[in-house]
Amino acid sequence: MGNESRNVLKPMDSEQLREYGHRLIDFIADYYKTIESFPVLSQVQPGYLHKLLPDIAPDHPETMDQVLDDVRAKILPGVTHWQSPSFFAYYPANSSVAGFLGEMLSAGLGIMGFSWITSPAATELEMIVLDWLAKLLNLPEQFLSKGNGGGVIQGSSSEAILVVLIAARNKVLRNVRQNALEKLVVYSSDQTHSAFQKTCQIVGIHPENCRVLETDASTNYALRPGLLQEAVSQDLEAGLIPFFLCATVGTTSSAATDPLAELGKIANSNDMWFHVDAAYAESACICPEYRQYIDGVETTDSFSMSAHKWFLTNFDCSLLWVKDQDSLTEALSTNPEYLKNKASQANLVVDFKDWQIPLGRSFRSLKLWMVLRLYGSEALKNYIRNHIKLAKDFEQLVSEDPNFEIVTPRIFSLVCFRLVPAKNDEKKCNNRNRKLLDAVNSSGKLFISHTALSGKIVLRCAIGAPLTEEKHVKEAWKVIQDEASFLLHK
Image (cartoon, rainbow, N blue to C red; front, side, top):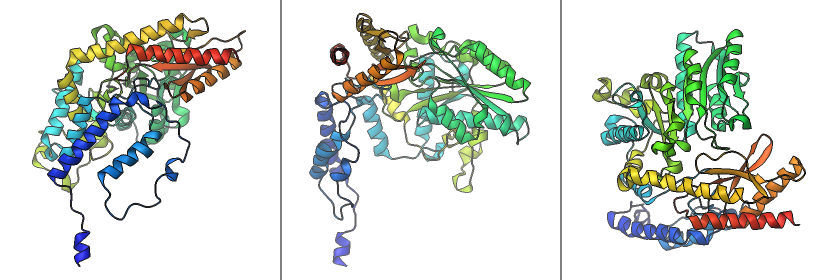
């Protein structure tokens, strides 16, 4: 009995939290202080960690020193350092002091904010900060919470697309017979994020009814309205039901921006739900000089951005605005007895559980609130502008080297470039660019990623890490040039 009582787990008390918390903050601060000393892309081999950690969990408590020692020696070598100033791959996944503190505060409070009554501040702060962002983006009033629209925080753009696709499907099936699912048609470009394809699979859209419309260099890989109109007309003639269009501002491959106003006219005239995924680029649109790229947003039904990409808010924090919140709640609402309460029953409050897929939700708005308060909108605008300036500088460096070419015009902070083909041999050129990508990333000095545009292998340099400065961009270009020179003269 005595041994059993000694082995009963006691939660950490406030003083242990204070001690461990200080040490963990110091550890993270030291990590950021020395982040440039790590290879940006982890150089470990698959299965490395299985060789370093035991097969079973410990029976007895270990010390914080033991845990942090293992993080240093065993975990960090297998980490790709997304916050490194030399991380230029994919799109950024911003972390910041303000975002981290908000995340820590949310974790410390440990609340579940699925309905208003479970933590009123969580619901109301989320409504307030999404209204703040909507106003910074100059979104139409229909997207504000004072009417029948409003904003909600999702885990990712994929979840945002899934939520509105379900809402759109249910809305159209209420207006036609319920067994018409096999006639529903969705539209996107071939540059739309693969998350859209996945959500269509989840929602049950028949694969043959997913229209992936081809783009090319003539529109800088933006979706052509004429092509959309042609596809919609053909489907209507075939007795199908066009019901959903997903456009993009800032595609993953090349940051292409679809023409929202023209596409919106087509969607609206055909009673289609029009969603815009602006996960990466919408952060730039808080700057008045970049707001033009979401002109036409008034024609959309829903609009999303990921504050965890380029807005200094730690993952996960994807923002979704809708004009008609009823379309979400009618598709996603559940009301079991154990969740009923007076405020909800009287329709006095918003319950965000009915605006998302899961029931549970953390206090994510704290992160965004702290970012907006501790930095302020003017500093955030200048933060974005600085990254775009650095991308312009990188673009200029590439343009000045005859061995390279810019593949698509740069709009935001993504530069798409490649080694030029010799004697118009595109196959050899693609192989050479793949080899350059591998050589650059294997150096550990920076990390870039790639895509394919019109059959061309293209290198992507996405500038957006919080710590990136001019010197890091210049150093990255020197590594790329050196590796390219070695390849070209082999």
